[in-house]
Length: 335
Image 1 (cartoon, helix red, strand yellow):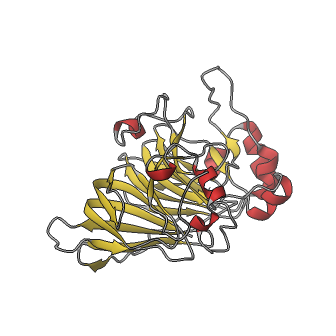
Image 2: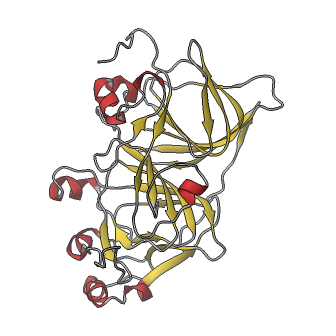
């Protein structure tokens, strides 16, 4: 049991991710972000997670070495009072390196998941594209309305690709994926994903690939047909985003939904006398996912917390004022 003084403000801390070696992954999460995870391929790192399939570990401060899930069970006040929290972390944040195409898949909503998947959550998600090869694409819905019987037949026969809408992908693009939307990240794409804390994926088509043991991965066609939206999907358009500047930093909203809010935050205090100041309120924790640069986080009566590209910082709700110094770019996530 920790000796945390309940009258003092909780301190920010770094997180260490869990890694996943899915067959479509590459090596960029180790090469670009220095994750040091002994998996090949390294497809995903679950940066901020309390999900039992891949919990993060605290990597600094008084809780260092402990699972984030255990720390939050012990200190639910870290999450704040947002109704989505309910004493468990409601989100999951990942890096994804798609060296090859991901499977064509769909996710259920909360209602279906609660009823059919033993009380689990559904999956709403957002992708922020960190990098993309010249011809990178993703799959987003159907080009036209499709009859469910036709869809199921095409899935069983392995020719569904002719119905799928393919969308070009560029660095800094944002995509919001609602439950029921057929989708897949394409090869050559590096992504940060913010989602509900769920690992429910219904795989519809997997290009007849086999895993390292020579086995084809399981498909979930019946469940997918229960939840899939068979209507034509409008091609996703990139919204106009406006940076708001204050001395030393700039921010822009990139996504807001029921489950999470995401901003892109840039800091550059190299020529600024004042450091960047901010704090969490009582309603929600915040997570800073460093997607470029480096710097230091300073808090009163606490050791300096140095961060680098690829690091993930958890800031409990109702924090003291935090000061940031350096030149870096973050995705700032809260509920």
